Length: 323
Image (cartoon, rainbow, N blue to C red):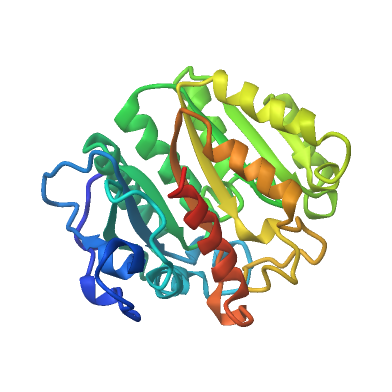
């Protein structure tokens, strides 16, 4: 089992949460006033808590020849999240468990640490909310869930890319996560449950579609979201959730059109527009009764404009906490 290595793990810090104060009564509160910073190394109950954990990593993006800067994503998210108003119940706990940090190109070691951190959060009763970081977050996030629950895990990926490419020279990157999960499920005699939403033909080779088809991947292309198929898509999501014990949602912000998400590692000029149709899809996912974990990947603050991408991701997390 992976170990929570302090060489890669940095506990939560209350100083990372600053913002305006309008009052101290519940109706005036903002996230920075209610979040509690913790150290995952300490045994504790996280029952009923949404547990934020950053993955300060861009090594997978670098290996995948993407734009560098994703490791700054967790800090950018915290700055925006800090100022959000509290609309969730006063019984809802919001926890910051700190960051897993990748340095010196040691991606695999950082992934092992993230695997252990997710497993600990689940084992202590928390709901992991991971802040990326590159999409190399997916494989260790999945392993952490599998280790802790010993149950079937279905993954819903909102993304322009299938991220199912083979390893390069035996090493993973930001585009290999689902290939690694598929290999793991095969080795462990598990079923590979993968629903990809927002996929674009221009962003994936035919070979990737063929491999996904061979593995039984369910694909909803971005071009189908804005048609009469919306009702079918919602039904498909609900049916997917019923096939597994646990659902894990991963969101790659490059799934969205560049006007809404310019700050990503791989820009998609004609991606998903986060309008009413998409919001119905997202609401359907977060209302799944067995949703157990979420991450948001590929935020690249260096290329963001007016914090558009960060605010888009923050809005999705804001909705999650209302569920």
